[in-house]
Image 1: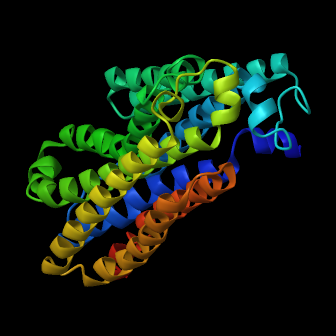
Image 2: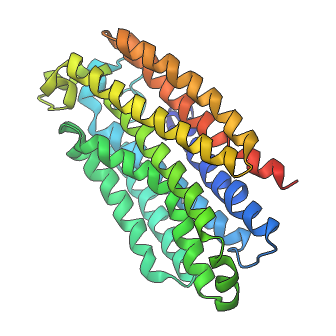
Image 3: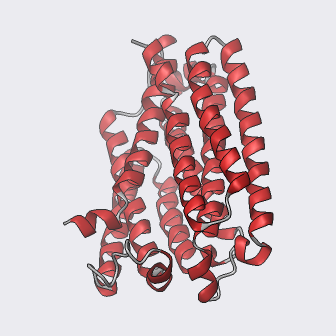
Length: 313
């Protein structure tokens, strides 16, 4: 069973699921509880959204490995799963089953939420994941932006469905609308954070995989522009994100969310370490470590939301 678990990236799926739980229970529920509001979607509907996200995400990871089988033979020969433990044909079947199950579950969730038209999102997202693996990831920046946008979508998608769920309850919607500014501030801030960190990580991963990508004619940013340019771009993105995070900490402190503001200093510290390592990165192993740092930054940044949950206890 180990190869089947590895191919769906359980750690990445856990981060995605954790993000959804934090958005619901550390952003929306505290705001609703503190202001005596009602109308949040039932927990069972939320669990359907979580299940849909897991299935579509897992399917995306599988097809990525299936279509990358030749590249992975060069970039990570010791970690390759497809054609080593699982055949390409079997991998394609797993992708189809996971994706179809995710789309169906998403449609059921959309219907039960009273927003069947929004179910199109659960068709667009797996389609984007497939074309990322099939085409976009081999183009400079396009694939990076697609993955970054999908990462941000994990934060935003809950708010989209929660908004329309509230809209179907006019009285609850009117009461909750007074606090949309607060909710939007949190959701958009963490969506932007997820977008920027994912974008930097994807660029760094391209630098890490240059050898195999170049051999098979890929036109990723590091191949087209070189490592020095790529490193400068990542440094600029790091500085912009750190500055934005600092401004958000200031706003949190002014609004009384002091614990979260202080917790984000851990994220800033790891960002500083990543910044220093970016200046020095020239080899594959260095970029691999930098990629891991960005994953840690994502986790610590999202976990800072626990502070709002603790305020609610």
